[in-house]
Length: 464
Image 1: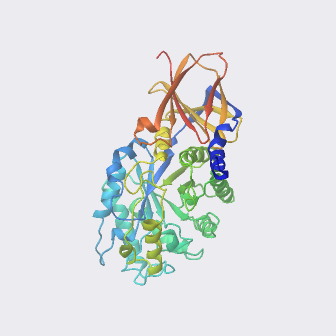
Image 2: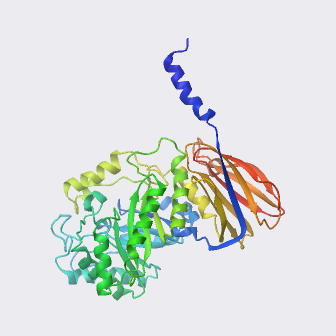
Image 3: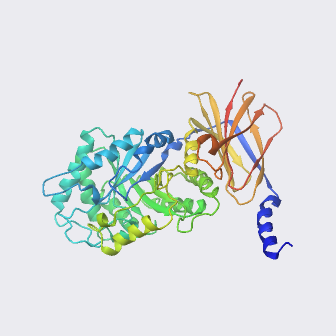
């Protein structure tokens, strides 16, 4: 006898199979040149957890992603000022050198409070007891990496200063004290490296009054401000895009400022992680498309690898409550941030970045009739092939008609689908081959089926 409960389970299992795919159209314009795609502007971040070189064993895999920027927290555990007049950079050197070994440029986030200058552990004590020593520390730090030829361009002042310890850093600024701290810090940076790009505030929420306070200050005093930065953790790519548009609207009120925009921490809302393993990889693709479409200059996905933290280490520069909060979140809560998990196993979202890294050369036209279907089309003259990445960020399947406009010649598309639910993490399993298709000038549209949160990548070549 089939019970009511069994029927309910069966209905849940069969429902996706019975879902009717919606129809959509994708027009590819092979002669519509939109300029360099520069997908490498949408890089990675790591840090805030330990002085260890957290992802050193995955250096080759990160290098394969070809990120242009890789953000790192300069936290107090690096012990940069162990005593008055003494500077310690050796431990930080290892992390900077690891970043440089991937070909990326470090984005250096200043988020440390040496005990010598901040003897009281208090997130609301945000200015050093001796600005002269603070300025000298920052000068020595920046000069050290300039002299080493580390190629560092970006220096960011503070991390999530609007929320302090709950954001993993010992600072909680207010609109009236952040500009003063910022001015001292960037003056020391520029004294050591006049070509450095400086900015902040790396807000947890772009609406914080700290941002307009910084913009007012920079506009009125001519203090250097090369970029503004903020963070968002939200499972809606549209919500991520909204922060970009709102920050740009705020910047438009300051005609004298010419700054870059950097969203240097972003991911899904991981306090409620997705139950479907296909969602996060597709979320990465859709969010980066929205970033590109909204004109964001740079981003840093947080983060490369999940890692346990040492509560006692954090208790040296955070309150007992703050240190316990860090340890509880990272050591006892399920984590899905990293492209690699705690055991250093690669996650499906890594392969989205790997596919994106193959979108080299110039961007070409790709217009979709469906708000949940987007694509990147690029041509790379070095490899002499076209690359297409297309996805369906929706819970329903889609039957997609791909129409090729101005096709230069007959092309063969070698196809891969990102299989986030596969049992193994081998690249040829995750990026599973599917049947090739041929495209010819004047031919009928090519139809493909994209599953919910499906991602495909095509390499298009002639005469092969």
